[in-house]
Image: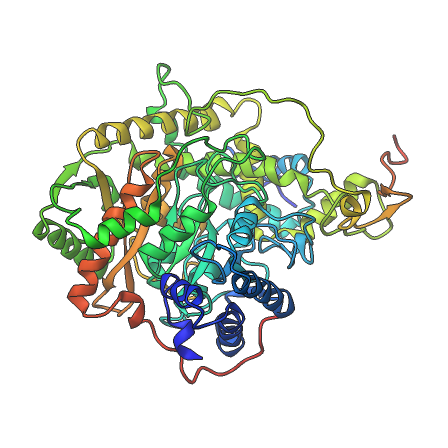
Length: 106
Length: 511
């Protein structure tokens, strides 16, 4: 597939391929193409946040300021092994079972 | 039994308390209604008649034994599928969670159950609450009972339709950028987004944790308030849950219905929330509502909130950033869909194939966008800037609430649009949320209630009220007063004008 850089945009198919890898989503070539266009267009619409985000404005990460509080570390709300595994796609011997962690080349 | 389904929750609670009607009868009437109309509407993703009727009989038995029960005991409630429940599957509208059974109840659900409410089904929604039409559900669209070819709004289209179409008197919703308020507007119902942290998010399948808020959905302001009182309160399971002594919202609503609470109320109209391209019939109803408020002695004050125009942009950076992180848990290991790629592969290949098949297009779009916004080199320009905009919007609200008691706006710039009409242009739906998003960015409470229909299409128009953080009760007091003057204008409650759906083809019942 040819490298299609969106007009005036910084988002390319390669960028989206990289992001999809980070996000662990296997995208088809068709999805890569359409997402490149869409993400680029969305970013053009939302990049204006930097117009007003000047240095002396503090960022807000949380809408209502609250202070961290400590509580005793008490064991509570325990799931049984059966409950913990009841939705597992695959399990064996009381554990989640997955395919190999490392590929052959690793 | 038609009259049972057309009662408000408060009325139904009255006949349940007096013993005229049993919870089993009320629950059965609503389940029958679902069987009758939901084949066409598709508000529900799951029902469980046996579990619901069992719960109803248990409440009846407790009442018969003389136990003192909560005001809403025995009243049926529909639950947005974003909330996990033990009696029915919980999917958040996604194929990746098809068939998922939670080992525990979300706190809002647990509180509803312990107040004696009867869970009668899980409602449809945009996948992981990403959308404003419910068309992004992996399980098919929900239709608006006011016009079956129209969307119900979203993401909580299912909960809004459930109450609008008399399938349930009450429902739970979640509001990240308007997902309770906007569907309420589009279906002629009432919905509230509480102050952030007012209601526990424990057991709500997270979309954007700093924006998500669980809230009540109903046909009247009082019913919404009654449900708010049931679910509000601190929960040690949610570290952002507020430890606050909340006043009774129902008392505020009753005060609003009875009193002269609009006299002297300062109502702000924010220039920036009067969007370009607002539908004429929506604008007309909004202006009419302001005139009714003035006639009741309220003072209308024009407000400038210069940073609101950046709200949508900030929201569509913060939400995808938080969502991309929250949705990383769907890794095909502990729960959810697992797809094994042809010829096998490592756990990472399995994960990528599972997420590729299990997530819909809008979910993939937002995960990719969020991952980009959080990338090294772009973080400051995008996510960092969006967080600063959040501060600026909070300051705009603080300045506004120094001058007014509540802010009023149309809840949505248009009435319900046709199914498929916005397909292919994600930005159009994003921009439509401009009226509701600022409240989520600032954490303040909001309420939508119907104020009439638009002249050009006969579809419901919603009024949004906003108040400062912790002042949820102010919304119910003012909202109930406005609802009363709308009812006096029309000679009937707004919900009574909803189509009866008599003669709707009895399609297949919800599973």
